[in-house]
Image (cartoon, rainbow, N blue to C red; front, side):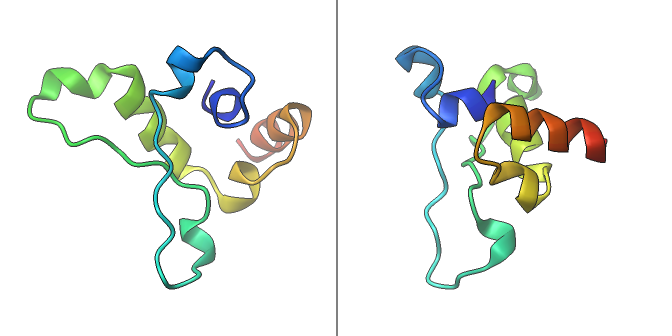
Length: 81
């Protein structure tokens, strides 16, 4: 779902749940295409869509996050895990 929302393949209300992290002045490959993980005040919110999916997306390897198409993303995801 995160890949689809970042590439405009889902409705706007789902796209607005994720915020891309600002690129720092250093061009680090590991920091490319990551999402902002919301700050939580309670453990209850760790089950929320925006927190869980952003955390999972950021833990993916860079080559999977940067895949150009949905089919390539799925292929890389299933091949690596």
